[in-house]
Image: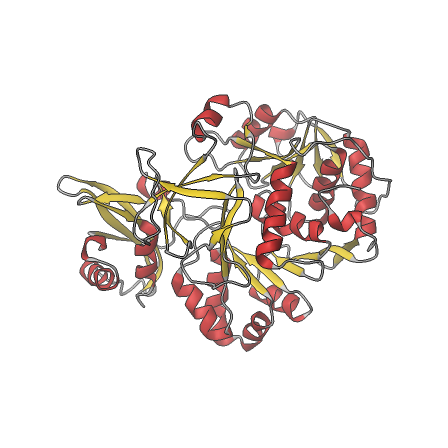
Length: 481
């Protein structure tokens, strides 16, 4: 039926494929409902999907892919200006949405087609190429209007098959998550991943620790989340023995989209005996590395390169860092079948993103341990601090700060300093707002754990850290304030 979906190609038509809030579709039902969408959409072109966290979004995306077209997932929380840019840039032929969903004015010029999850039709059999676009996913646009990353079908299959190898992911697995469906984490890994394996996905609609515990107790084997979700789990565990028991029974706990603080790693491990696995990817590259299911789930690392992925660290002048010493910081560059083909309508940005020999410049800074494990220290643009002649990654300082009992949340940035070049600034959400830890106390705390030159010189207290929909701290909002 489709090389993307092993479950749809197989004979288990009565097996439950997806479940949302008590509603479910078997593989046979999903194929029939997606077949209606595929026949309406037709071959080629781009189709917008109003990506609410519901069954209709899954049917819409699967239908578009079965038609041989490219889906453009739209974030329902996007503003009018951003949506207008995405619609103008991607020029979709129509928009697919759940019946009754209210669409903003920016989509008013598009033909709307409501998705009927009860409808049934045979799936068409278009001729498709592995290089044909499957998804156009728009980046967050932190340095300008969002860019549409064009992900070909082979990038999806390469990533999902590599993860199946790394995580020993099979049709027997039942995945539970509450991730958004407009992003590659929730949509590609969290929905297309189970469908490719022939397994099942249970979407919570909205994340809650209670929902995770119920699903894992009721047969789910894997949980995917972002650090914010795992932080809430870590906070809830001391008073919820049922949650601890449910997590203890999971086959695999995976965190992504941002670094999981070591403090939360350790709290979850202490309460459950289970270690959370981290992986590393981007919209443009899908997945690059992961801790393997049969490997060592080492806190603070994102594991080793996935099968088929080449990874190197380079200096600012492009020189490759040859040694694996756990200290030398360089920018991650990757090559492999998991990469996107380019930014839609942006040949300039596409050319700038790649080296002459085809390596993608991720903008992420990391070190590699002697055994090949990758430890990300931050983004080149916002997390690499050059202070007193040292290159310092914000991530390890954030982890150290989070070990202080007076710190609930932490972010680290750099700001200009006449003597040091840049000084380290810690942005702190205190555990007790009435008694926040002071600069000297936190500086000494960090210096004892890392090195004196990594201590913060300035501490600023906040009520909350600004985060995006995936739980990532928006550091530009801090530094631009």
